[in-house]
Image: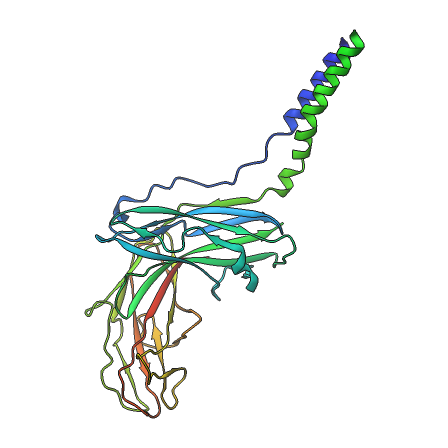
Length: 160
Length: 170
């Protein structure tokens, strides 16, 4: 009987030490400031992926908001910029194939906010620098005129 | 009887522990994702909206918008930087210039962020830094200059679309 008690205690300790892995962390809330209701915006401005490795997948929702009074179509696309964070390198050329944009051409009603899932799926045999960066850029393609604007979300990826 | 009970308990424990035990390897493989809910928002405007007409230009000349012609309204909740790029010259269906440093039928745009220095070459493929830091909520002005071709083979009107791209500062 003492053995049984001891085994149960040991098992309990083992189970306590094997807590589930932490969930991906999103800091803070996603409620936009009210003054942005009439503006077109994206959120967040930066997504940091840590402990990434070949064969891994990371995903995050980017919110976009159509601040105009008319429906608008947006393009959501991948971009590598020369303007990158210190300590990071531009994403490898092949990384464009690893990034999945679930809805690359969303249409938003006036004042609508929509989440678009972005996933990074690195093949098991792929290689990348220790720290690399790419952007997801969002553009209202119904804009007219010579000068148009787009909004970018930085993705900073740190390998394990 | 005691022995059978003990074996049953051990088996149950083994079944309970083994799958969890394999999860012991997970924390080191767990990908972390962190994002702070910042908001990126800009609009661009001028006395002529989002347009500017450089008018009729002469070869080997330049024409500009004037210093501080465009204003970027920055409603972002964090500091941003702004890149600039264009999509080259296009005049359907033909007779469009080449987009590069001035040469025969070849022209490009320069830009600057309010100082009138026109020190930023606007590329037609790679975004260039136009404004390195705009603090959250702070607007800024900028301007464009057309560097005309050294000679013309045709006088068709040329157009381009300039895109300014805002991103959270690193």
